[in-house]
Amino acid sequence: MQKGARFALGMILAHVAVNAVHGAAHRELAIPLSRSQELFIVLVIGIAPLLAGVLIWKEFSFGGLLLAASLAGSLVFGVWNHFVAISPDHVSHMPAAGSSLWKGVFQGTAILLVPTDALGCWAGLRLLKRSSALTGAVH
Image 1 (tube, rainbow, N blue to C red):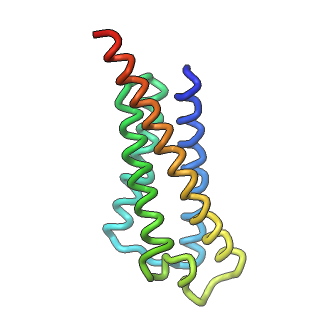
Image 2 (cartoon, one colour; image 1 turned 30 degrees about the vertical axis):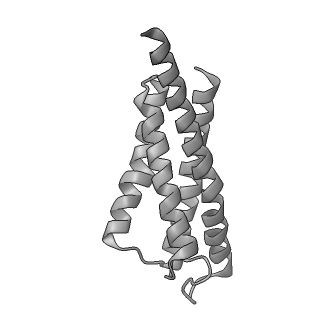
Image 3 (cartoon, rainbow, N blue to C red; image 1 turned 90 degrees about the horizontal axis):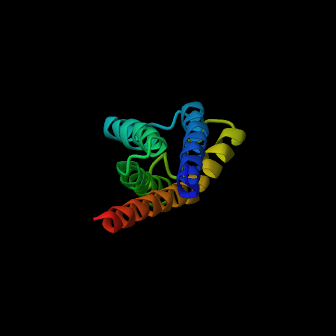
């Protein structure tokens, strides 16, 4: 397996780990999400990167595209909901109830999702570029 693929798989694992802890903080603090947000989180933030990982592992070129697209979507969603839109999901407008430990975990993971998703998106784009270059070189 090439170095770029290993890096992409590592970024997928980091994305999953940070999101798991962030999701736990959401539950502990009872931060509400709409149905459409929940659907986006499950499909784009949860399932799509894992599917991309399987495709990358199996060396399908579509894996890089799926990884880049899903983590770009995750990045935009996270930045908008955690740092722009004023709501209980914003890092500085959380519900008053809840432990300060979980509030810190929520804020820390919201911040950590930005570089994790950005690097994962970049890794997917690198794989896509590499597979395009290889495909172009063969023809």
